[in-house]
Every structure is written in structure tokens, then in C-alpha cells.
Length: 414
Ligand SMILES: [Zn+2]
Image 1 (cartoon, rainbow, N blue to C red):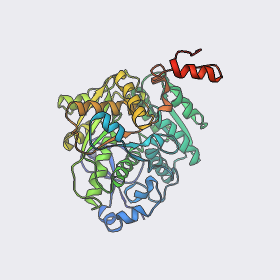
Image 2: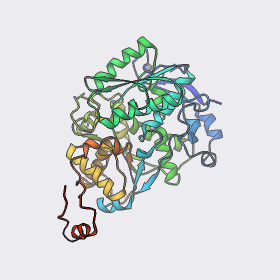
Image 3: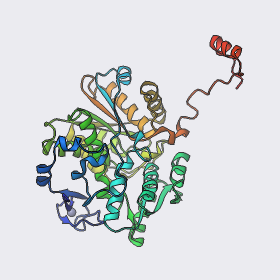
Image 4: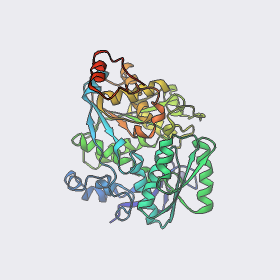
């Protein structure tokens, strides 16, 4: 049974049917999935959720499908790691890392939104799916399209990391590199969606796609023992994830699954692409688009689709936003790896570095629970750290050489 009523305009409240629509034709506001919460409340419980498989679909009443998922049924339920070593280093008491760098099948949180989007695309009868991507989304659409026997087209800026490009092409999809940044690619894709009638994950079926993000928030809550965290630090590209984590807390509270609590949302951006954090820091809700200039390609969106609403969500929660330089984000990647054994990509480095900054500023309290959202895997962005780590010391293959190495560490032949 489906708990989806239809789509609803976030601005004027006008209702729309469950179709491939994303913009209100009256006020141009974004459309959101609308659920029958009263019905859900009657059937959902902690016990019911806990009895199901450890995937994002254990929260299926709150996801936008009419039937069961046909793509990505194994996605989600990634580890929430209690990060005591990092906590000690940062001087805080209670710190967790929600680790989507090991999500299935393509090692980023995008597997969640794509599973929701492609399953919905199949329900709506689409045969071809596509996306405009900064990398991780393309990986996931390509892989999961294979699983769902869908044709796929991936549009990406031509300057992306090799891991992201090869990690898309390997699935036998159609990859189109575009000479330009994500924002240019995104504009072009809106026109393609109209002309070719394809389901673009993050454009014409965006309302369904975005709902997949909520599962990241539900899992944090369940894994904390059915308790919302006090503070969550979230990387921001288009700005959707921070909003949906806020929505996850709100829904679980209103459904009676958790006690009422205050969760403050904090957004993290790279200084070279920081339209959202800049607005928050200025106390403004106007997003001034920028041309991205950062090595954090996965979050380099200069004109964020959900910018306005993410500023609103952050402010209403009592949180804040910050940004860090490329050097700081590399330090963030190394800090997480060397304290918790988790190798994240550039966006994760941004999130760790922003967390450190917010703690140093006194904005994140040292004695309350903090969750850091790690959304992607470092093996995809080796370029970012390639020259920032020590090269292996090469020695001759005999015990004398190794003894000399242990004594002086100065016997490397390369
Ligand atoms: Zn409207």
C-alpha cells in the first residue's frame, strides 16, 4: 500500500499528481512529495522498522514509491562510528561519523537518492535515466541503471577526477563530458529532459530523488538509540541533504518514533564554492551564485538548487555554516584517516575541517553530541592528496636493509 498522496508546492501549497514534475506551474516553487502521515502513524513503529533488512528501505513508508523498490534494494544502513580518537583530537566529548563512504554499490550517499529516483522512474514507466553530476551521482546512476535494466546518460564537467570518470564509464553507460562547470551542465540537462523525455534524477524527478536523503537522517537517529543528535555537520553542494536531515528529525518526532528534541544543522562548504555558507554568515537568505574554484569538485555547485531553503533550515535550527580552504580540506581528509581509519573524499575533508573550525569558534559545544556526515570515498579523489602524503620508503629485499631502516630510516633507494 502506498502512503504517497502526491506532490505539493513548497511555496503555495498547490497539489500535483504523482508524476515527473518538479516545479509549480503557478509560482515556480519546488514540488515536494506529500505523504498520508495519519495513515503512516497507524502502521509504523520502532519494532517494525527494526525487524526489517538493514537497508534504507526499512523506512519504506516514508519513501516515495507506490510499490517495493526495484532498484537499489540493498542500499544504505551504513555504520555510525563513535569517533573517540577524533573527539579527543578536537577536544569534544561525544562525536560520531556517519560513514556513507562505504555505501553500496558506489561508495557515496548518492546511492540512496538514486535508489529512490530510479525505482520511481521505473514506476513512472521511464526506460532511460540520466543526470547532471559532479561525480558521485554519475557513478551511482550508471551502476544502478545497470541493475534496473535502464538505459543511462551521464553528463559531467570534463575536469573531474579520474576515479569519478572511470567509476562511471566502467558500467557501460553513455558518459558525456562537458566543457564547463556543473551549473552549465545542469542548465543544458533541463532542456534535454524536456526534449528527449528522459528521467533526470536530479531534475524532473527531483522530488522523489531528494526523499532518499532522509534515510541518512533516519539511520543516524536509529543508530543513536532512537535519539536525534544535538548537532549535525553536513556537506553542502545543492543544499538538499541538510534540509532532508532536518525533515527526517521532524518526521520521526511527529510520528512519535522519538521524543521531541532540538537538532542544530550546520552546513559545510569549500571557500572556493561557498554561496550557501556565505549567505548564512552574512545573515542573508539571498544566494549570490559563484563560479566554483576548488578541488572539492563533488560539492562545487555555484548556483545551488536548494540554496534558499538550506539557509532557512540552518537558521531555524539554530545552527550555522562555515567554509574552508583547499589546504584545510586536505588536512581534514588526513585528520579523519589518521584518527578513525576512514578515508573520505574532498567533500568529507571539508566537513571535518568545518567541524574543527566551528568547535574552535565555540559554535559547536564541546559537551554535546555531534555527528559528522561523511558522504563519499577517498579512493575516488586520489588527486587531492597524492602529493600530500609520504611516499613509501623503498629498501633492498634483505634483513640488513630493514635493520638499517629501523635504525636510521635513511636507507631508501627511492
Ligand atoms: Zn506553487
